[in-house]
Image 1 (cartoon, rainbow, N blue to C red):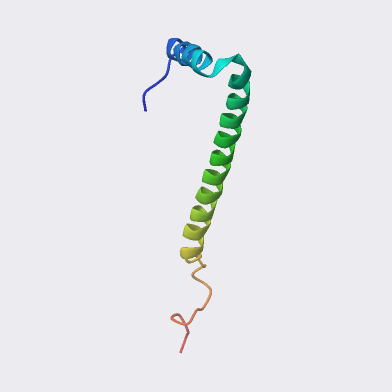
Image 2 (image 1 turned 90 degrees about the vertical axis):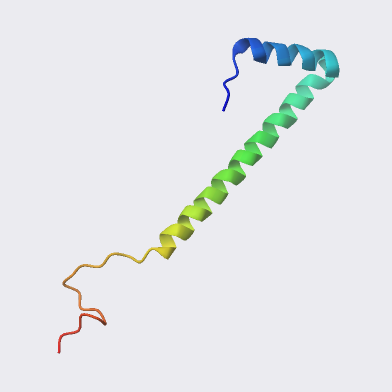
Length: 74
C-alpha cells in the first residue's frame, strides 16, 4: 500500500476546499469519518466471527489419560 505523505494530504485538502467550499467541507469530513469508523467496526465483527468459526471447527485437545470411544480398555 503506498504511503501518503504530508504534502499529498495538504494537496488533497486544498483541492477539496476549492471544489466543495468551506461550508460543506466539515460536514463531509464528519460523514467520511463516521463511514470509516462503521467500516472498521463491521470488518472487526466479520474477522471475529470468522476466527470464532475457525475455533469451533477445531476439535478440543483432550488428555491421553481420558478414555474415549477409541481408547476403551477391553
